[in-house]
Length: 367
Ligand SMILES: Nc1ncnc2c1ncn2[C@@H]1O[C@H](COP(=O)(O)OP(=O)(O)OP(=O)(O)O)[C@@H](O)[C@H]1O
Ligand SMILES: [Mg+2]
Image (tube, rainbow, N blue to C red):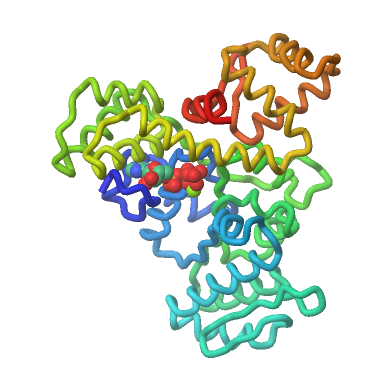
């Protein structure tokens, strides 16, 4: 069903993106590291999940945003518990290889096995070594002549927990039967985390196959909504589809949300839907502000852009007026750069604009 709000897992529910899906299928055969990048709600997890459901290769999927949500923040404990669960799932799903993996993992420091259940110790003294773990996975995969895909959804969440470039470089260089796929909503941040262009970084010079997702065009968005309503036998007017698209642009996650809301509630109060959707976006931006040391400054910059102040010099003037003092250019540029890194805003020509109209609405009215 097109208007299901969970990430899609089957090709028949995946609208468009066949090209990107094909690219994943091709790349998995020769790439070592693949990145699916796009701001929030562009369909990264859906693409990844549909692909994993179809590929003949085995996979371990880690939803790294879930560990932030479940535990309040990412921590080594949360990551190890999530990895323990997924390894257990892997062993149960691929019984044949699972058996061998259980045997191999028994002797690894910090790993306890009970039946088919894996538990990784995260305590400082006896912490399981992640690289060693994946070495074992690789050994078994090599023996069975299969490939294992390590899928890290929202990889930037691991940035303060483990040395991500080190782990990925180790897998890239040494574990030839493991291919890593990462996704990231904070596109610039992912590049910061990977440090591909830093000669000091372990990942320096490695090739990353990048798949960028895009917004749907007007025609694609229109067709998506039309098909979604039709699937559920819900009447709609051309004006309604126009109105939705004019509000959410071609962001497939919002199109799905609007369609889902209307078909669930059999109500077309677009203002109410917009407010509900923007409330979700507001939570995301609040979370960012809470974690940030320059909270007030980011808040003011976002407020300026949402109220139509788009030029560099005008935004800077707005901020200076708020603070009652001059801010030097490099400090100001750093702030803007961070907002771009987190995919909240983008620079188009000389102007700064929100990537997501509902995020803009949230900043304007709900923050
Ligand atoms: N190609 C698609 N066809 C139909 N629905 C889709 C497609 N891609 C995404 N969706 C829907 O859009 C919403 C967002 O999708 P998804 O969670 O895959 O995006 P995401 O980029 O991973 O988002 P986030 O950044 O929040 O993790 C979901 O409701 C999903 O069902
Ligand atoms: Mg996702």
